[in-house]
Length: 287
Image (cartoon, rainbow, N blue to C red; front, side):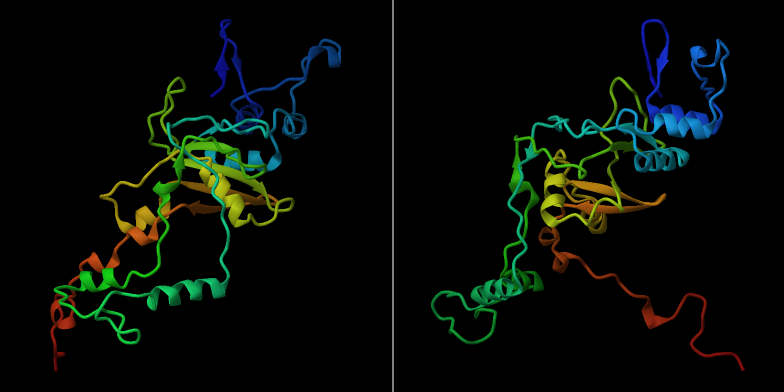
């Protein structure tokens, strides 16, 4: 915590100093010239009034910082802490901003109907079953032929152009889990990226704002061997919104996941217990 200079002095950020003062690990005193050469300890209330508003620190940002620090997380400011900062190229591939639009209900139905009734080759009537005549040796072949609508592929939108999301939908903190080996000179990739929002001053983000925020993050594809639930939860990139409402913090995760790439029909069903009875139980009760 803090940065040391050549004179072995440690310089703390406002949130770090306020956090240490709350814990009782730091003693902050007023300047001597303000009280006739006498160093007066600064109270916690005075520290809040003095440090909040300094170097971009707000009460909402400090609430999130203090809550994460209390639970053991390593929390550092992101590169986009200030509104004028541009996200750096931390990876070779960053996403460009995509034109995100919400299709109308009629547009979805029209696309589905056009796919269903599209020409399927000779020998297939205009009206009839969805499956063309043929030999299907397993359910996978049937489900693949029923895939009518194109699904979203996150990897198709990768680009080297840096995206600059508009405030306040910018990454505020990079967070690492408590057990993560951390080195200041070479920090690992953060486990979480958090954007802090004031619920009283910010409305619900639009799809375009969320898309732009996700596009500013580096590529982080899921591990193929992970469970389907984990891959869909984290996706190819994800961000956590810390929404602060008068001191109460709620965390919401948004991720760019590829639901269409998870072929549920290829998964084998779990085998149930034989006979439908638990182990150690008999079929008939004792008389």
